[in-house]
Length: 259
Image (cartoon, rainbow, N blue to C red; front, side):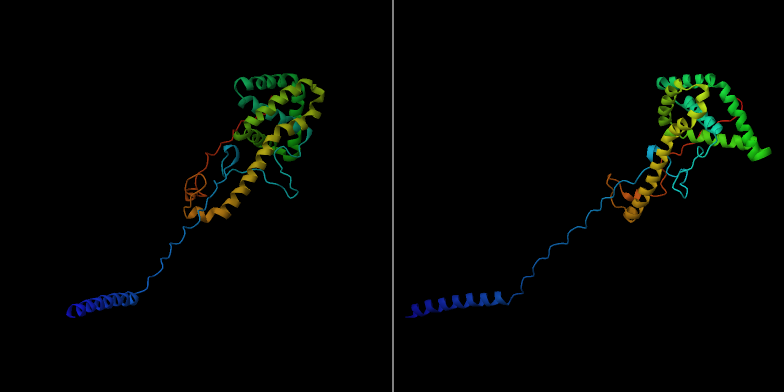
């Protein structure tokens, strides 16, 4: 009987221990659910900062548009004589700058232009002297030379010279069918063709300014915070004051009224 009591006692003790363990487990602190970390902030990809067309300076001046929307240049509102002379100037700039095998026909064409239209050009030169004297009196020579330098600088704009060379090649071919008597009527349209690539460049540069202003408005803050741009560099390195391509110097050619 003593053995039976001992077994019963052991069983009761084991049950009590199990119950106590369960009770203690129930009284322990509840488990706290793990909160996942917040997702990383979205990546802001900044597109490359707009650049000037044809490698031009980021701060160059271009002819502005007038109230009527037209862009007035040194070739606007010219007399017939001035149109001939500006065409001559454009052809001269092309002959000086369009070198190599591709430019040889231009240089030869300009030399032929000077010979073929020598009398017309001499008469045009005298007419221009009279026009400038009528407008500026004693300052006529200075004013004419200053204006003519502007014309040369206009056509010598480095980013556009390759396009001028192509226009001059076309001019060389077209002049074959133009007689000296037809030069005055031919000059305005030929001058417009020579000027066309420059007007296209000015339009592109104006669009660049617009694109740059929009980029600055949308991504300027991101740039300041160093957010990565689309090309893999930090946008903060693209400062508005950061130097762009080297400024181009316009060619200044001394102008004389002699042929």
